[in-house]
Length: 209
Length: 290
Figure (cartoon, rainbow over the protein chains, first blue to last red):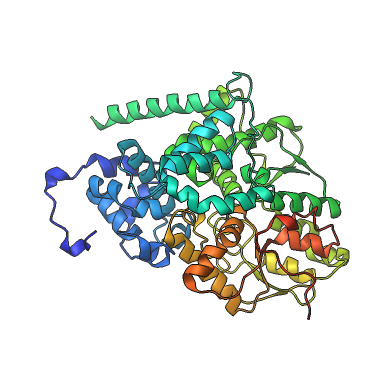
């Protein structure tokens, strides 16, 4: 990706004002408006030198409504959630949570870089936990390898064999009961989340018109 | 007060040695701890990337069922050894209790399954339990085979110290150093104690592997015999990708990697097999020659 200075100037029409509104509506999002672009986040991020944009530019672009470029960048997928930026931000912006919210929107919009298996991993992890209540490392890795680049599987095979020999590759799942409808049922809780999300969207939609 | 063990999903797989050594060490120290029944995944870093409300509710369910399973007047301390679990549970607790918007939503979602979140559970990292509840003096007194001559690079990683930890300095943590020192080891001074291991990026990107190279190289430069870890993912990244990293960056020597709880177990004179010492790619050489 080009430097910010070399980027073509966007027309107002290409910006999406609903994008920053949506982000600042989040419980942790109000502070986004307070960003002074000091760059502490990018400076402390152990992965910023491998990113196309880095967290400081991301925040600036979110505020200006540049949704397309933000959701298509690889920066958000290179965030390892180490929270260095979050604790160093002088304006108390929860930048790691901003990155999570952007990942959610990128996944929903189908904007995920092909070269990166992480978006696939996040989705598959989510699906496995919804079914079993717990993650299953071996299945998860197998699924991600099959759905992304199966050649990577060959590369990882020796490690897999060694893990297996050491009794560290669990083949059977260790699930909890999901979908019983009884007290504490995980599925009931997850379904309630969907319902509450919809109600919240509806309310936000009503208040912004 | 009651300690409730929250093993997390890697305890049954890649992080088995962490699980085994924690359980053994708690037993040897006579600290009673039972596993939380019906626990579910904490959501780790992946869930939050897909759905925020579900990620919070998923983690909070563990706290709510713990409250439900034990008498109301009992103080419950959930012991979460994996850094992602520790952070996931703490984060859910933090938002549920301090943020009316997200908290209200989490409580409503739990209420749909007849659970009430009261905020009674403490979320604890075993480092905190060993150093502050049990105490360094007692650890020292119970040490049977001091780790004499073993130079340890204590590696805390990111999510124990940031951003919600209540027991550690976020830039200069000391609990693991103090624990291992009390048990006879020599902690080395190095600058990477809380530097990122790349998390889930390590297996999939060169950037992640480079972060691990930095850790391995710095530990070597500091003269460490072993890197002691406190998280299954940190441990996995540092040990399992080490041959690839060595080849790529031309590292000559191996850098042993083990869980700090395994080192504690060795100092307490516990059986190596029971501590999962056979489940490491690059195990430390013990005993060490001074």
